[in-house]
Image 1 (cartoon, rainbow, N blue to C red):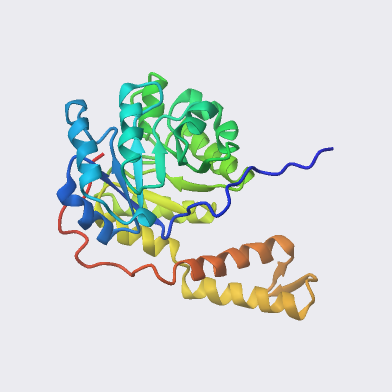
Image 2 (spheres, rainbow, N blue to C red):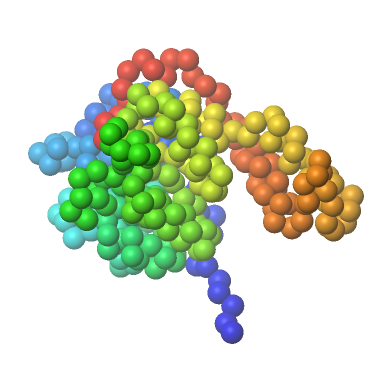
Length: 303
């Protein structure tokens, strides 16, 4: 049997922190403020910009540069005129990462000729998540629920207030969320969890971030600066988690990698790897700011 080796770029970009804030590209006065409040800003040339404003948005993108290490540009779907014009505008900037809206095939990812996060948000894209993740210049996957449900002919990605499991994703959306996470992991790419559109629903956001962290997501996207602090806090391991992880790693070294127990819990290879992930997340978040008390001041992005 041939051994599978995921296709990887050398030194691909990865998120410098877990909170990615969308910002409409036609609102350049918000660019710097969004970047200051989040770990990564996603300058949006697609859904956040009215079609008539997209030319102005591309001009603003070129005229108002941000740190390319902390900036992603969401471009329009492949096959559209805006897609070609978006790529031409990006060629006049120092940005090196795009997010491909409504990604549906390998060719559209290769065609960007730039490091690309594939946004899986259509039924066809969902069925091809593994093929897309395997593309060499695909560095990560994100998923979206609203376009997905629209593509299904549905009306709501979440259960309503009069239904059981109110506020939670419906099963099809959860399946795509899981499929995207698995596809990303299978091909050694990072995964970004979808936005929580109701920015007033803090408890719902916290629950989804906690679940994303448990499943190994690297980051969570958001549409409002007030959500940033909850995402950062959710991805930062607690003191108890860090203490447990250090006990596991130290105990494994003492037992030369053999099975042992901590407080009645059997520790073997998979548990050790989980502990190592916790400590790796601590290291990765060392330079990520703690909660910003000014983050609620105003809306920094629109969906």
